[in-house]
Length: 100
Image (cartoon, rainbow, N blue to C red; front, top):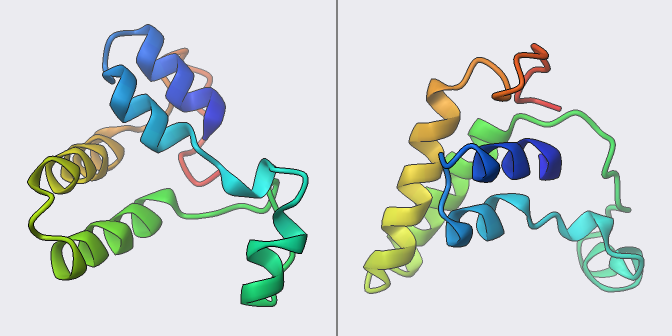
């Protein structure tokens, strides 16, 4: 997702703030297993396939429920969900699926 989001930013599809939200992958941090992983009981799996549409829909539902006063964040999250729903693949045409 980090590569795809950079491609989208370079193509002008994402603002820098949208790019920051989409590209941030905490599992890439070397201390993930000692911090978040220790709390959740799940080790980092940055190369594990995932459904990013579902992840961002879940995040949007969370923001709407627990952070509705932050309308800017809710709007940005909605924008990312809508973008992911419309993409068939990255702008380079490689055909890589969004669930990567």
